[in-house]
Amino acid sequence: MQAEQLDKAPDDAATWPDQIYDLLKSHGIRQVALVPDAGHSRLIRRCLADDSMQVVTLTTEEEGIAMLLGAWLGGDKGVLLMQSSGVGNCINMLSLGILHRTPMPMIVTMRGDFGEFNPAQVPMGSATQTVLEAMGTIVRRADRPEDVAPTVNATIRMAFNTFRPTATLIGQRVLGAKTFGKD
Image (cartoon, rainbow, N blue to C red; front, side, top):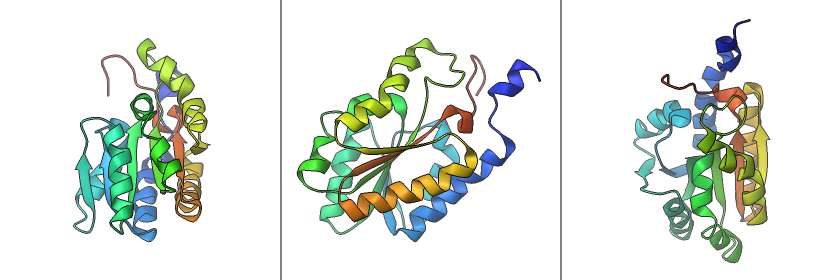
């Protein structure tokens, strides 16, 4: 097997964004906060095409924490989609979910782990789970396409059942490692 093939996501990885979209609908998620991310692109397109969902493109990820708090106070459920590099921007704001007992489900696509080409992504990619957990977030990780939907379902349920921040980390083994000069 060539090195290029090892870095690509498995063929069945193409279904997990649709499965997550179906889960968002089944959980009554009406607000989606995001910073655009290639790993979430298919899911983002599905949410944008749904008139029952309010999709808000953020300038920085911590705005999503405030948006989820506001959504909850306003009677809506929301989710934050981001890349692992954006987790570092949320550290201080994550305390809001704990202080105010607010469900804050996050779906995080990972960079800086399996096969990463960009050395600048490695530090935050290596620290993402530790940082989230240090701020009181319950974290679960999916490293196989077949684990993504059940893991996202569990973390969404946990967020709204325990009134706290939760996160699913979707590993680069699912996404496929990016290479320099290619998407």
